[in-house]
Length: 469
Image 1 (cartoon, rainbow, N blue to C red):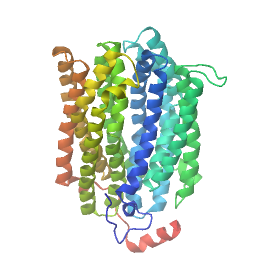
Image 2 (image 1 turned 90 degrees about the horizontal axis):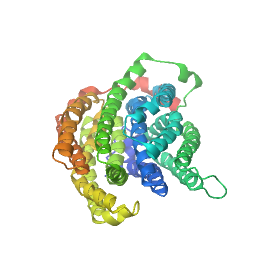
Image 3 (image 1 turned 60 degrees about the vertical axis):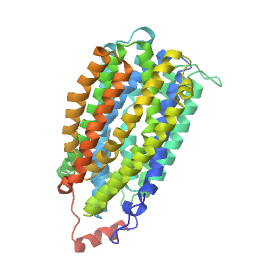
């Protein structure tokens, strides 16, 4: 899985690290992040299935907001990667500081928006009684402090872009341990702490994020070869902002479109009853672990491809993405088959409701088709973004997700009566249509014309390298 090093690459060049060395810490970091959500699901299942379903509804909106806040984070990570590949580290540091300021402003705006409009949003989701009360409680606490996650995303993304994926992993490990410990103390009430239920899970989430943010800030400043200066946070370069938004806006819009479609599918499921809603939440919690390797490989590939594109090594970037896709498919199929074989006892760990177990197990089988298609997108879309070719993925996403999968899902769910399985089939169709299209786009090599930065002339590069040292 390693990529060959360039003889011109520096010792901190991500392309020298190899895909495996970059990917396994990202994999563990994502695993720990997903475990936080699973911990909430598993621990809240001790309160009730309604609590699980309610938190699932809120997290759908929270995740969309996180994606909106990643407009800056995604764009900055790719721009910084290309500048590092071009050996322009001082500019990479200035762009990093600019990204922090922009994401803080965006995060505060999103948090305020959730507090002001959250109740109205939940009122339109067919939630009633205890489910509505649970959802409002969780949204007010987690949503109000969502700006913490905005800052975590940008600092963690920059840390990975600089090649320090293991450091990011260890911080996530600490956050995960703190979160689970907080859940243990606050959901059911232990060691004299009050039993707060859903509110306890939300409070634990906020505290663990706040602590992790402080550690991320400290670690990034320690590892950057050229440090961010105080003036960099308030110095806005139109060229740098334009480059960040050129990649960040399309990337975030595409992800927001995907999650928006998932929210529409969730709206379909609300008409199927509480069993289908709980089954959807449990199936999502399990499916995250199936595509985890593909996501980690995609993020690792984006770091390497970004550096290679910045260094004008297009042939290496082209070959690396295709190798990454091969590994992603092999691992995804192996993990998915294993999950299918143990699906019933696995779901039984979350709930004793026989109807929920049967429905969740059914869609897990359909997931084999869905996840293999998703692998194409997770690897190749990340590669295209890293090369600066983010706009194409948006157009294709609108055509496939909005114009194809939503009408198909409605037809399968309500006209053919396939219920939750119909939603999974519609999503699988979208993943394969986009996946094949992304493969053709990468093979066309049209992305080679989209680079955001050119390496400086060698006489100009020497002072920058000396300053970084």
